[in-house]
Length: 305
Image (tube, rainbow, N blue to C red; front, side, top):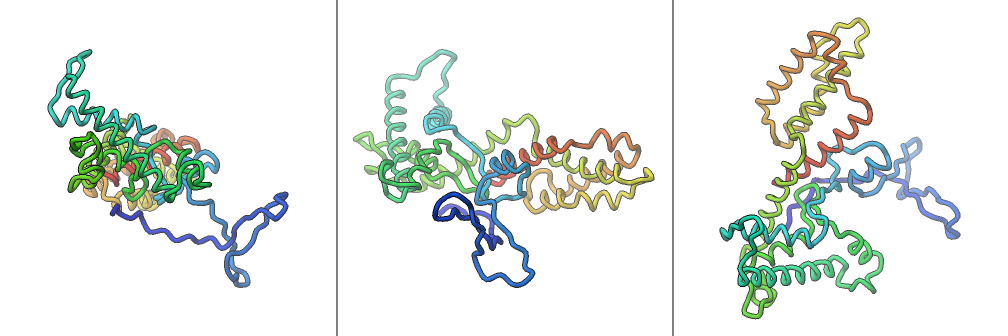
């Protein structure tokens, strides 16, 4: 069983629906509404990509956020083959090809993994094939990318493919035991998927700690620049950045709490010196939005390691 995502309770009490003619949208309540109660509509269960692109903000700790680990199943299988070669100590020089036996083994594993991918896709469609599955089948087939979701939830198609690829093939070249995975195969697939998360996280040009510190500097810079007389109370600045600090502490990701205290102290000292420091650390609206988006993606990956 995959770990559950973070708790989420929808607070919307209104929804938009199309009228019978389809010519207009109608706002209707989902429950009884008390006099004077605020009406709330949900943006929907979507990743931060949609929020970033269409709404110009990104919800912090969005339980529906995700990160692409592979663009398609072929990329996943190629990654599996490279990992398999490394784990079996098959080192190839540039331009060198694996032995015929090694290639045949990889091809058999890839074929079994692809069948596992197809079976998992059918299961995601509710057991229906692509032609008769309706909207749910269409949704699955429209998304070839393999992702990790917030809360360390991996695409079942990806986990099935990885688990099957690394399970010893049987005499017929199918999966272990004619389609039955070896003991511990799913757990091992999760570990490999986490390793892939680390690879993607390390592929960013900046670290998560760098980005979080940049956000913190921006928060403190805003506090300093808003002070009319040019003076600055460090306590107020730290309070303005408390959300960033608390996020890092709760998640338990790098940097560690003692390092955070040091980061905070260094920023307080730097920004308390001159107004110029605040100006140099300020972010434009688009810069901040982009940085927040990147941080949220990195947090999804960091939580999945």
